Image (cartoon, rainbow, N blue to C red; front, side, top):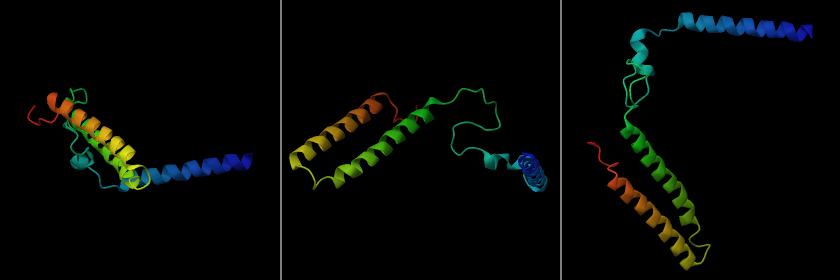
Length: 117
């Protein structure tokens, strides 16, 4: 038990020394704050965090995720082309593509694809 306590104290001491040394030796300054900011996030990192967030960036993210999942679902559909009956495969792929087109039409009607909004 004493050995475990001693090892815990030594490990904590060494890790704290390493963290303090890295903070002292790092070359970061306030001017480098812009490099650490998120890329294309839709807000200024130097302003208040309580400002309203643009909903347009959220909608574009949702559209991207929908079409990203679409691609992940189309690959197995292509792979199973030779494994199943052609008419079942055609019906499934037709239904899938129709659902995607309905979603795209809905996004177009809601002006989610209009960047000037």
